[in-house]
Image (cartoon, rainbow, N blue to C red; front, top):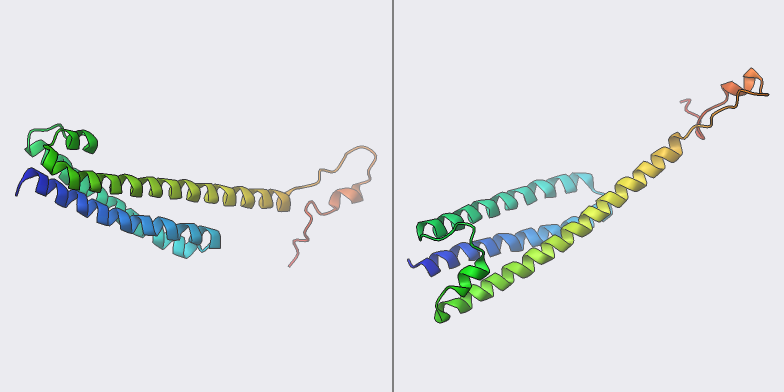
Length: 157
């Protein structure tokens, strides 16, 4: 198998896994909006598996480059530019697909992070509102006012 064929095979596997990860990140947005914590936890575990698969494929790609006497961290775009003209087309296409999918995943993850942060801020705001206390003044009040409830809710059950 030639270097190009081996590289193309690894990149196609990465592309396949990233497409699955892209679907999960899109679904995750709706799960966050729906506030389905159980489903979010399961989706996050599934997402971690795909990320681990990508990491393994990246190691495989780095080993391939090393075995062929190239820098392990050589970017794909530089690698493609060093290849002969006839061998570039399919790799350029895969590289563009990888770039677009990674950009989309990054964009969705930023949106998901914003949604989660907003939800946490909303929860924090509500908790502060519910647990806010009224501090009694110590001047001019009699002691019966100090026994009043410190919350807007009666906590008796």
